Image (tube, helix red, strand yellow):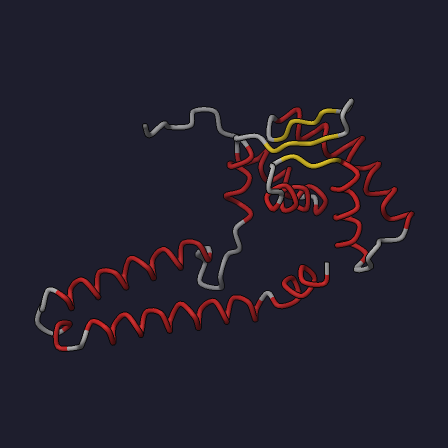
Length: 177
């Protein structure tokens, strides 16, 4: 059943969370964790590697990241209810409320829409055009639906290529890990 979320974080708190690069990195790493939980050591090593660009990251960087996560960032996120920080097990787990923050982590294109919104719009538009062509509606029906579908797939491929190219440095950093 569809359920409306009633307890969402205020935008000012979301902006405070995302204002710090290490807190953004926490969400990126927790989002890529298959179980949703990760040890603080693994999280700090991953963030230190990303920050330093070296694998493994220098010891001082790892220690600095670990200390700041343990003393500052994770307790703050735990207090806001977006992660569960278990100090005794040295583990952090993402909570449902983190979706409020995750919405703001999507990359915005130069046109002012997120890539997710762009792909959704492109998919809906392509579907409408293809169904219209299959129905034989004048104008659109003059072109073979297979040609419309091929054009839509080509547009998706070109868009994905452009998106990867504009974020190529982030992709390369991810591949180097």
